[in-house]
Length: 310
Image (cartoon, rainbow, N blue to C red; front, top):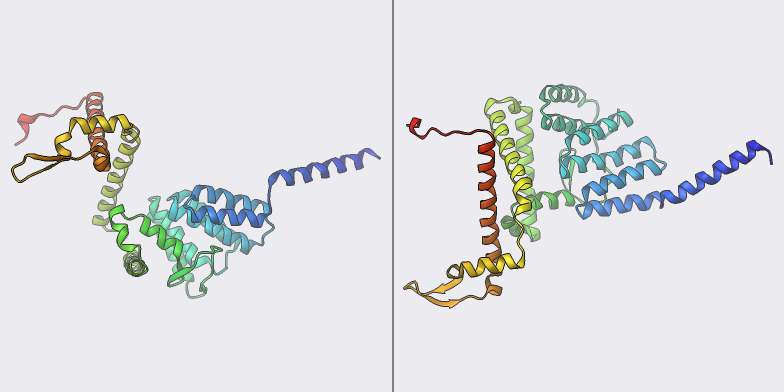
């Protein structure tokens, strides 16, 4: 066996071994990615879709469809607008004249707006509007197996979209949408909201001073809430011992009282455990917030001049 043939055989063996290590059939990888997304494991789903793109032999159109699914996960589920923007731009590179483009252009505009790049968003929107007469979409499926429950123009709304939007509601509101009729009512409300939002965008209201100020205030509020969750959240962890101590220290709060205010029956801990846990956590959270405020005021040298306030 000559040296060249030996090298080629070794290379082929290594390649085959690499393929075996790399794993399963690409179709199974895609199926797994879909299952992850259905179970709200969005980061993991994006990673698996990326593996699928790397391992499967796909046409540019097929790659665009899979990338569209990934972009949607970045945009709608993870709120990672930089990666979403990169994915939508990749679709334009893969299929510059195909039927996904109107929706892709709309999402690119939305990404740029959320990244505070409104000037670029307007330019993309103007270009997309100029081309809208010459290219129309026909309800393209982006490769997601979810059932389409509504269409807003060219944009499909899937059952997974509906489930996700309901999951974003406060816990006390979700109960109203557990039935089919409730979900249909929410879907109609969601569609109306999207229609109004689209109309406001077309009118250029994102540049309105009141809108910009409200957006800033909302962003500020969310940032503060996120900061408190990260700084205070880890401190608000209760052990069973904490719950018992709080209950014993506040027995009067968990007692049944008569009209005269006297205790008729002391409720046992197991009967009121959930409420005790909530009260104890709220108190612990308040203490942690107050301690954080004190540290920050001292570190920043804050002074309040009471006598100067009229």
